[in-house]
Image (cartoon, rainbow, N blue to C red; front, side, top):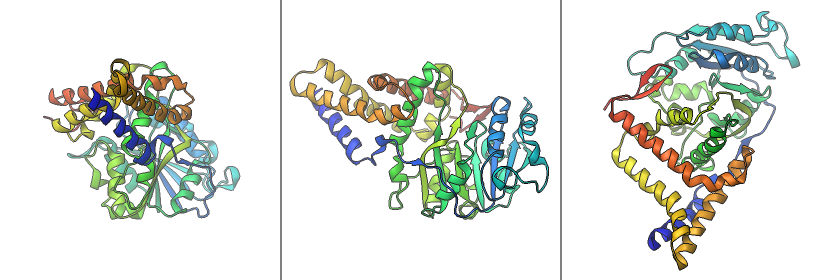
Length: 385
């Protein structure tokens, strides 16, 4: 235990001091006015999203953006009236060509595409996105999910960041739903772990190979998407946002930050809902590798459980080393808890939270080995064992 406690403390010192300062939970995209206002196609893939799509489309139609923009909804085989809810959410002014909307902007159009079944090798969502991209011609694309509600200043702020300084892609970790007890316990940690895995400061540095994005909102230049071969270049990716960021960063700069201007309204009221969210792609993240899974288990035990067990059971200086590691882990979680308005006492439960995420990762592997694959919206994804 003495050696493990020292190693754990050294790991935490590295994470806090030299790992992109991920724990600061920054940067955040501020509200801004776009100095230039290119036309934008907003692509929203939706499959059975009747509960959320109305609020999403209404928020997009209300964007205070001085340029022209169009909403392209790809109805991906919905059976719950998603398209009808979307049409009903559009303000009446949007149906009048050329009519002026609020703040002098040209009202957006809503184009609804009935999605076709995905060809072999395509994930359903990316095939829907590809159809939406092909339906437009604007030089800038906003790819956003069907559960994201946007502040009226959001599109202008995203476009402003595209040019100051110039990048090819802007992505955000939108504010996730955090109302139920399971969400309050597990959702801030999800964001914290994502920051640890992909430190935003390193993503935003051109001299770093770290690349990531958060799929809730991705603003990308059409020229950059064409350069990598379009959506077809990542057609089978289950973790499509990170895969897209990696492809774009090979030839241009990208930006990843937090968002105070976009919020997910998809609820996760039960622990099982969050469990299913993780198990869907966790083993995919590990590239279906048993060795990476074993390394993940060992790493998580070293980082999260050695400090706790050592602080409670070790003696003399090993106890001090373990307690120091535990203190660093808890303190590093505080900025993310503050971002979500949660009590700092949740930081003391990080070992339990990590155990939950570890169990879900192992569960994802077991699901894969049993032949279940990844499943979402009544579709199976991912390779079979």
